Amino acid sequence: MSGLAAPAALNALLTDPGVTDVLVNGPDAVWVDGAGGMRRLALHLGDAAAIRALAQRLAAQAGRRLDDASPTVDARLPGGVRMHAVVPPVAPAGPLISFRVFRREGMSLRDLETSGMVGQPGVELLRALVAARANFLISGGTGVGKTTLLSALVSEVPASERLVVIEEAQEIITSHPHCVRLEARGANAEGRGLVGLTDLVRESLRMRPDRIVLGECRGPEVREVLTALNTGHDGSAATIHANSCHDVPARLTALGSLADMGSRTVAVQAAAALSGVVHLVRQPGGQRIVQSIAILGLSGSELVATPAVNFRAGEARRGPGWELFNHRLARC
Ligand SMILES: Nc1ncnc2c1ncn2[C@@H]1O[C@H](COP(=O)(O)OP(=O)(O)OP(=O)(O)O)[C@@H](O)[C@H]1O
Ligand SMILES: [Mg+2]
Image: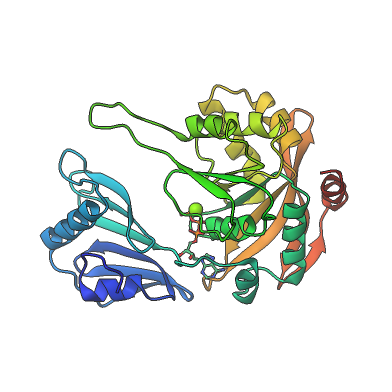
């Protein structure tokens, strides 16, 4: 049992190890995502009022509210489930609930290899990235396994190093013995008390970190992150949303502009600070794989990603960025 105040059929889905997401679009429209990709279930969770009540009950279980005044909620439920819910009028067709299920015990790099996400050559390169204390990003679209891979790599960090993990909501699961955590806090109803990722990155620098791990770089905190990485905080990592490794420079530039950074500044800082970008994709059948490792560099004044290694069927093929990537790892 998950211990959630939810109908038994939903609890069963949320504790099924093969399920990664449960999406409630309406009374007769429940979808699940898992090993075989997305599929619709013949599951009835009651009418719209029952779904709204369910979302409110679960939000309350996580100490959050969901009502007309606060029609959206992002909550961490007991048992490692993240729930996002939105109710009318913001969801005009009726309440929508999205559940993301995390494996309670996390997945090691070995588990990810067994799952087919990465082959032996990839495992070796990822271990080398961690061992060299390289700064890197894990990129990919939504739900491709970025946080899961970051967790596995965090667990590979030597026990003698101190990690500060910064997240919007706790998702990184690690067996690392010296890992302290900071979690962002939203503003209260009066608009006060906000402690955002930017603040937390700044705080983390005073906490004697050997490595800083940012769950997801998604806003103006990119400025603090790039500054930290350029001032001696090696071995740090973050995830970032991007549909291909070639889109990472534009994403970093867009995030930088939120912090009033010009594209040239972002380009110079990112090229100097980051040794690599590990890009994940999801294949049509639902399999999550490490597709490539790319380097970031300058082409004129523009930031560009160049593949150093492409993975196909677990095999590694060197790309045009290989020599530089190898050189950077050796220099780290
Ligand atoms: N190699 C794998 N084998 C099986 N399940 C996996 C694997 N990698 C990730 N998952 C599962 O897929 C789901 C999505 O993974 P994760 O949260 O790491 O993705 P993400 O890219 O960080 O998502 P988001 O875009 O929401 O941040 C989770 O339920 C996770 O447990
Ligand atoms: Mg994630």
